[in-house]
Image (cartoon, rainbow over all chains, first blue to last red):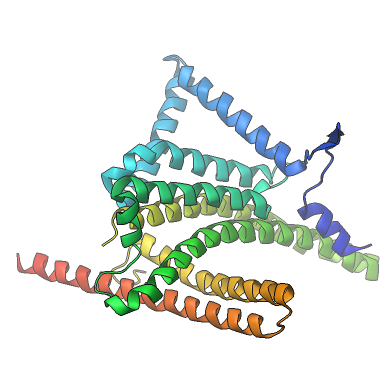
Length: 253
Length: 85
């Protein structure tokens, strides 16, 4: 049994795309998962929005209102102020999308798309774009660039501090992508490794494998619950950090 | 347990500092390695990049800690003023 191959198969993306007229269409497990999540969210949310005043309709509408209130009052307003209100739809979408991507990995035969650095990098790029847009919208190009220089910096230090601050902002966006990717990837690696313990120990001796079954399954169950928590936590952290960075660009001093 | 007069947002920002330090170092070293491959100057650009990344990471940590410290001082001032009223 090649443990490394099994782990790689469980974690990595699988490309079963097609080539049409020399043009490669890379249909991968992660891209299909992402599209499925997008379609489910689009259809599901528009269905909830159109629900009438039935009991289920009232319940789901209240749930969504609570969700939007949580994003607005818990994330956007404290960090971005009233200026952030116009970006509320982005944060609501971001939270749900990251959450559903992480939760999709817990469904059999589906994969966590956010355990792919390309997906998290694309999400971080969107957040970076939002931060840039906020800076340009509220301060203009010159004001935005001036915001990179901390107040009280001596003039001779500006040529040194300015590039450092610009690179710092780029690194902050990179960290957003890496944090989500690393958390999702490591969680799934731990899950598969715990399962593999049973087979690795079982190869040494069948009785030892049987003995490892219960503890490994117990740990597996615990880690799955932890993954569920991590899914919510990482969606919250990603959204919160985006709002903090966007807020720091809006309220520079 | 309250960890000083900070909000959970502040705690999150503090936890980001470590990762920012690591990413700065890796990006600096990566850029240096790339330049080494391009210009054939191995290992000087890698060393310079790693040094620059380390300096940038340190700058971010110091700045972040300074911001937190100022925030703490401001919060204490506000608390004192509230206490007088």
